[in-house]
Image (cartoon, rainbow, N blue to C red; front, side):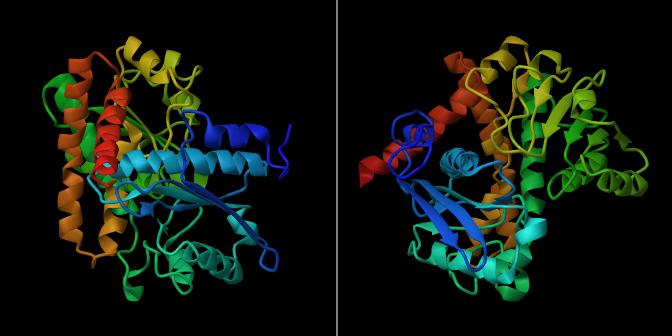
Amino acid sequence: MTDVTGAPADVLHTLFHSDQGGHEQVVLCQDRASGLKAVIAIHSTDLGPALGGTRFYPYANEAEAVADALNLARGMSYKNAMAGLDHGGGKAVIIGDPEQIKSEELLLAYGRFVASLGGRYVTACDVGTYVADMDVVARECRWTTGRSPENGGAGDSSVLTSFGVYQGMRAAAQHLWGDPTLRDRTVGIAGVGKVGHHLVEHLLAEGAHVVVTDVRKDVVRALTERHPSVVAVADTDALIRVENLDIYAPCALGGALNDETVPVLTAKVVCGAANNQLAHPGVEKDLADRGILYAPDYVVNAGGVIQVADELHGFDFDRCKAKASKIYDTTLAIFARAKEDGIPPAAAADRIAEQRMAEARARR
């Protein structure tokens, strides 16, 4: 069923009525000359201008793209709140295969759409977009971060994203085992792309045992050739069943924790870089019922957004790394709140983030 605009009715219901909605603004963008089709979703500006990346992905249909933009934007509100940033949450998605349709003309057209929002939304990189792309977007839009150092930016944000996930793992180890060290712990990483391969480096440096998988076999092969101690398995289904796995790190797309994966997961901790790891409400309770400690994704993967937010004020890597180091303390505080309130860590993180946003609304 569709509404009078032709949009799927369930998308509009999500936007205006469901718990996953509550967004301030959703913009549908089209530039026929370049082939651009994009969705920009602004969930909240309570704490400041919405900040979030641009995902370039071959969605099955437009409704799926809109739904992803809404979910990702909402997640950014919570991520930015928990990271202590003066930013609300937003996200954009460009519909299509970046390997096929990405062009300078398309990115410039996208930049014009972002610029038309007058600073309500600040964009950056995400799946399918890179520093070089943001350099192009920035030619039309000054509210662009994740640019190259040569163009006044901070460069690759995946460096601090991986560092933040590493800090989240250390916090989980402290909470569960009484010691933050990851030496001799076995960590399984699903997805060793932008963030995952940096995470491997952190773990190996501390003496952890690392098991990986990725749909791109050439990426896995290059990684294992560089680090012979890293073990590769065929796929995520095999990874989550590895015996004596201490930590599982989903670092690819969302929905990794679902009704099929949680019952067979051997790890004691889940802590990864992927957004929206919980496939649906209730999965966080399923993890808790199995005694699996979940480090909320939007808390531990906030290193990247900390970096791009700093870029707006004149980037300083050491200052950003110091802020990202605090992810350790924030994650520990969430585990403590979860224990105190008798709720899963994901719910505890939501409560803390919602409190900060509510306090900001009250001050207006």
